[in-house]
Length: 332
Image (cartoon, rainbow, N blue to C red; front, side, top):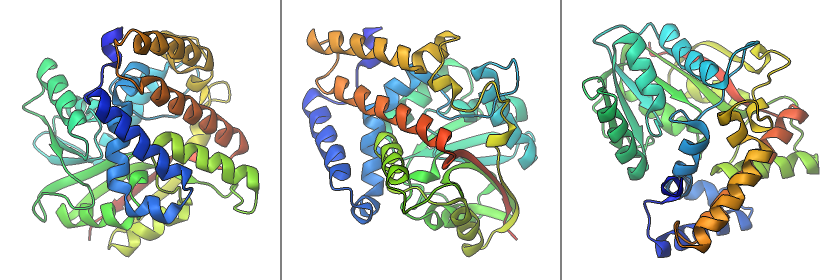
């Protein structure tokens, strides 16, 4: 288990990254965070990728859960839904915008037979995802590329379809990644995704709402959360035809809301993400850091993620946030 928390960075680099990341939020300056959103995202994933894989597996996202459905089953179904809505078939060239370590791309490639190329700003995620592709014998269908999704290294009109899963919230302005997706898609191609957004329940004049919003941003490496209407507007601004847009939070069964895995411990994966599991994990990483089995700063990183966990649950209970605002758009 100690190996899980070994970082791609040296101890000195971890210290520097944590310091830079923390200062970004100590300033509580959205404009400053937006100006350095790319480096903020890269720093964040250098710090948390190992923890995410430990807690979530290879797919770093939420999903609505049906009654009796496990977290893992809901996540795979959520990914397959995109493949179906995009009409993916064997031989198509598909772009995964903000692919992480590639869990969704592998599930989508398996069900559709499409070739999926994912882009992530973080080199460590590219290295991890490439190893996963090799291990699962999917190198013929899945590729990871290191790059900024606001300045993608792909030729115009080179993809048949594109999707994004809870990734473009890392952009300072959604029009930047959406515009790049528009550029690299062929005419008539579809773009679909799930977005982290504020809902109509959010009140900017409410101090508690603002505090919870900042907690989500700080714990998840985000420059600024925006309202669902901003997604619609940004897609249209860059040229897409918006075919469908709606919040999928209501699709979860009342007994298993999307954030249930953050507070429950009904399974190993659920326990790891629950408050009790987070406490146990935190004690573990303290031991690992004390005995130098993980770099100094690992405890601080995990504490940051515990804060994110609490803020996400609170935002859900307040009804001010959704991690699954679905959209389907088409390039004319």
